[in-house]
Length: 167
Image 1 (cartoon, rainbow, N blue to C red):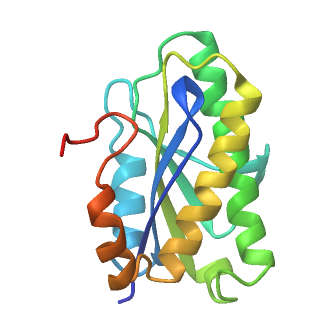
Image 2: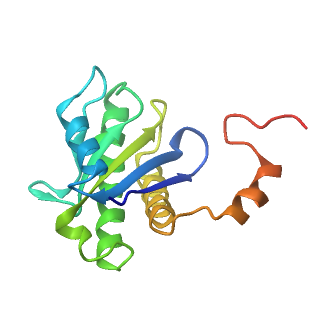
């Protein structure tokens, strides 16, 4: 069974977004991860279906898994509202524009693990960063990126927004 894995990071500071994504057939390992995650919430982490609007789920069916425990009303709205809406838009556009193959619509599913900082302070910036990060994660997954040459080019610049090793 095929499984596509991708990652996207967008933005700076407390409104940045980091998304990990798994895409693949419902009858494969991604489908197993989808059903296991949905059926196994843990304290502070309750996976939910991504919707375009109430009663209209994104396709392929997409599960949102929050990396950070919800902490306050703004963080909850940023996670359940802005971040979810951004992911719904990114997934739906990827289906409609052909980034995802036609069979993905009804036969595949997606699991996203999403970082929304509990200290976020701009819900619109959270939305835009999550949208761009999710689009990047989907493109990376479907393109099987990064390529080996990209890994070699990136290694001398090793680091992330939280840590860069000293030379």
